[in-house]
Amino acid sequence: AQTVTQSQPEMSVQEAETVTLSCTYDTSESDYYLFWYKQPPSRQMILVIRQEAYKQQNATENRFSVNFQKAAKSFSLKISDSQLGDAAMYFCAFLGRGSTLGRLYFGRGTQLTVWP
Amino acid sequence: DGGITQSPKYLFRKEGQNVTLSCEQNLNHDAMYWYRQDPGQGLRLIYYSQIVNDFQKGDIAEGYSVSREKKESFPLTVTSAQKNPTAFYLCASSIVSGDQETQYFGPGTRLLVL
Image 1 (cartoon, rainbow over the protein chains, first blue to last red):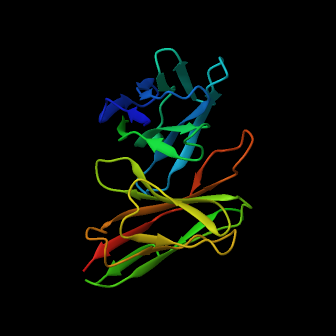
Image 2 (cartoon, helix red, strand yellow):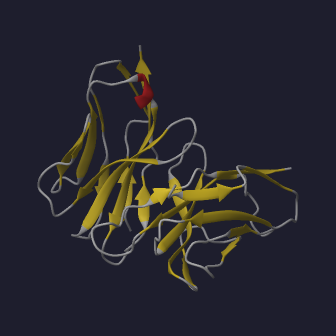
């Protein structure tokens, strides 16, 4: 079974500063995707960033970047120049491309607070 | 606009009643999914469908049923057998193959038991 662990239930950051959210996962699959989704108070799940396991280069989307360590099964999200609008629940998710094709597994989330 | 719509936004269920949550997408995605979200937990998969007229149970399918008669639509029925239905329900869709298997979500339906 696939498991996704987010060990930080809550994090906070000052506006314009940088924060890193942690995620680890456990799988026996070799081919998979990893995602970070953001859920603001509206509760809409919004895709933040995606990483393919076969790519060594870490994904980047504007102020959002990941640190993907495949051997360690670690997938952290770094938010640079934090903005008030970044405040949300962030979920790490795993999508296997083998026997679990199509099934997303989620962590329990990290609630991010951004202070002005 | 392309996207995923869910209705209603809020739904109330009485004891012993079946209720149906709607999910429609115009993204031409093959696969559709239903998730349940409870406070303090991540999303848990209820059912998913990768092709019309076919669907599979997820991790918490008991007390729920689905149909997939059209590519665009994947309604979820919460039956009276689901003893704790109060939750936030999210529908998602994705392309099945290639490098585009990212799931995109609808705005969700909040189900409350009266």
